[in-house]
Length: 155
Image 1 (cartoon, helix red, strand yellow):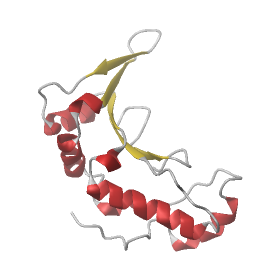
Image 2 (image 1 turned 180 degrees about the horizontal axis):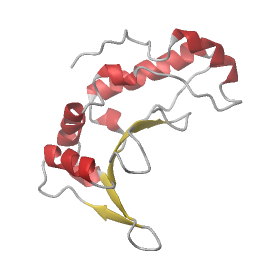
Image 3 (image 1 turned 60 degrees about the vertical axis):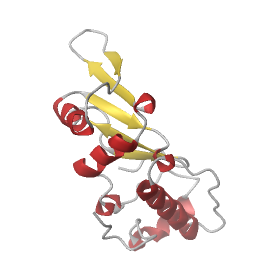
């Protein structure tokens, strides 16, 4: 899937007035990352396919016990399609860390977002660029999002 967002244009132009608040206040931006096509079920399946299984962080929560416990798991012989189906069914998530090292498509999105921030905030230079993608169940406490250094999360 190709992006329907012009390169380097993920934050709505009408929000550029928030640039002066960067680094001093928490600012919630509306973004257009979904339009990149990188966060569909199919794209996330492809990402899991190319990512080294040993580096995937697979977690689940058990809420039936008084003290909620986290379980850790491995992909094993499951396909990426089976992994996404399991995420859709359960209270679990998969953390795909440093995704830009394994996927040129996500690297391009990352660079575009960081370049746009630098254009919006005078004098800002983001030297350490990293992104992880957390793929979570609809009922999990953490929705689909991308963590980026220099911010809490982009949802």
